[in-house]
Image (cartoon, rainbow, N blue to C red):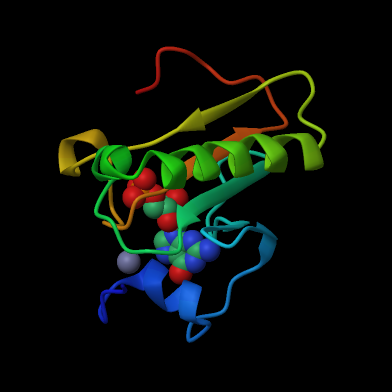
Length: 114
Ligand code: 5GP
Ligand code: ZN
């Protein structure tokens, strides 16, 4: 199921190009167009959902997403640590309303976030 106007659904379908770094049957990982760290990869479910919370109803899909994010971190050599983060809603900083995990690493990351 995809949403015709959704940017990340278009990346899943291939109608908008992206630098894919890993994939499973259910999830896709690609580089963020505006990286905030040396590694900045977005990991998304292929099926459209508005946010990560919506995936609670499909726990296998959620587990696949988290597992792929962890695999990307390993693949990118982030053995000193990384951040797996998701923004939800406009006040949470979400801009693209297709669920995604950010995998950020390759530099020390400040906490708390802004
Ligand atoms: P959000 O703010 O919704 O958590 O994150 C959306 C992310 O998508 C941002 O980090 C932004 O840079 C990234 N992004 C927006 N448009 C594109 C695009 O067309 N291609 C890619 N690869 N990333 C995008
Ligand atoms: Zn979508």
